[in-house]
Image 1 (cartoon, rainbow, N blue to C red):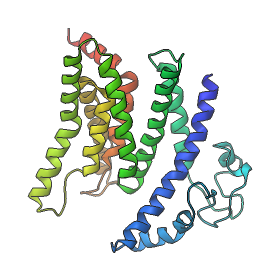
Image 2: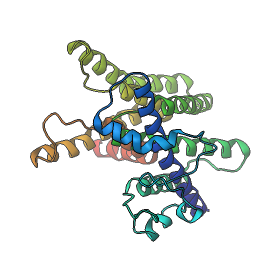
Image 3: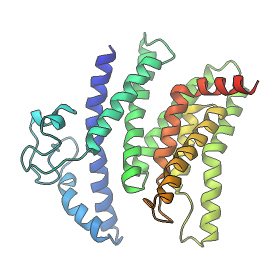
Length: 296
């Protein structure tokens, strides 16, 4: 069964990778149509991705982003097709890159770990539905991770479905909580930690710069709210925040010291929050228990 879940993850990862590029194409097209000035790089990117906006998703077919050749079935086997061509397009021989296979591997890994560590029996219709809902949220989280890492943006079209799924998870867990008041209080504190703090930073920095810039994006505020709904525990929310900032420091400090990153370089915080979230969801309670024993 684990192998089936892993293969399903690869397939869904391939789907997620395709949607990342479609989202980017539609975002650039919408920005241009609304009168927003695109940079030269964005204009060139829109020209390259424009075919992805020509057809509805149901009628669209995957194609090479370089030569626009429609891909055959043998080109669409997750990971294997990429490996068989040496990471290049079978038709124009241009490199495809690591972006898509990394997304496929990420979704497959998250699916597999979720199945192995899932704390409830997957036996009836309700439990299966909840697990499938969680797998759906993982696909959306990976799309957010990839999009923000590449373009420094967390699209609302992905945030809102996650907000709905997170709300469903929160309601189900609150209804089954032995201490409803305690669980609700923990949720509210978690919302303050993961969303409220960033909201305060966002509004304060926007006010200080008179709306010209902000220390964090408002997408991070919304993402923090969503993650708190899934976690439903203030300790896990705090751990998520700690891990995200720790990972950010591990990237920023060496990058600045080695002059890989210029001063003032932007680091997308969404992927860091999501990395902290995954660690908290899968291993957070073990980490908290270990820390509590260490303090005794």
